[in-house]
Length: 225
Image 1 (cartoon, rainbow, N blue to C red):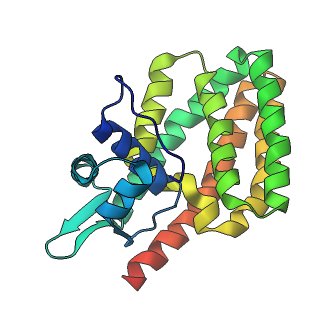
Image 2 (tube, one colour):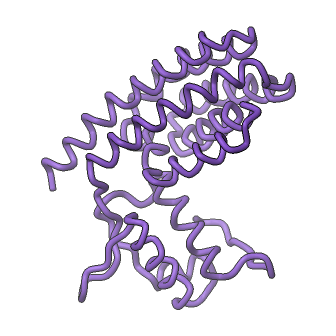
């Protein structure tokens, strides 16, 4: 959130603060239990306190932050049951999207995926988990936006928003970065070959491995809190 986000007539200041905070929570900049200071956020976004407070109230209604009297706002520790439910839905939606993408993906999208794979390898070697998180999101977004079904793509985006912290797996569990590249390459090869079932299976294996690590991480969080 270090960059200044410009506000124009299409973006209210509250909307800007909301999107910025939600992205930062998803990307792992703000960890579960971390306090969110309105004055500091306002300063970073170059806006007043009021829209930041309104954005935090909206995030509270979505369960991403909580507000304690005389303490303030902090990032919530999401309910573990919700994490499991979200994962089950994601498996269904994203597996189907990968299968459809194998039949619909454009050559330009495959070229972009190959480029992202190169960047992922480089950022992993540099141990840059923030950059890898963004590249990982872009890689998966290409798959889902290439499925040829706009409703399915939007549903996936909506489900991601329910439990966005799964996007920051490399920040929470850095060792995951070193096993993810060959899994991404397997998905890419299946898409390139137009093999729908192989693409589905490769993506589901990839998601399951991440899920197993996240389950252990979230259970440890619950014990600690």
